[in-house]
Amino acid sequence: MKKIEDDRFIVSVKVGSKGQITVPIEARRMFDIKEGDTLMVMGDKSRGGIAILKADAFYDLMGDIK
Image 1 (cartoon, rainbow, N blue to C red):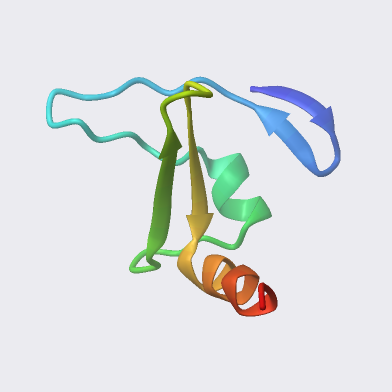
Image 2: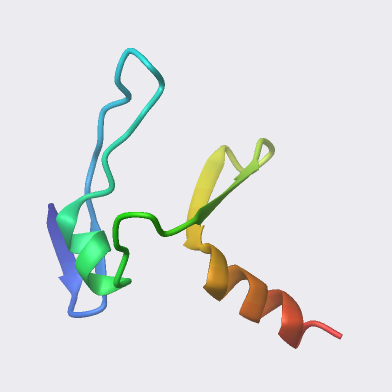
């Protein structure tokens, strides 16, 4: 893990044989991710990236867009 600031970090994860990744403990602590929480996975092929958000944060964000 590379800590960038108190509210940011970067860490690599490996994809397992079933296509699964482990959410690092730093992210689970920072974003209060618990067993059973639902996460949203979004991808943008043109930017070459994937983002993961807690579902409730995603829905809050979408509620703010009017």
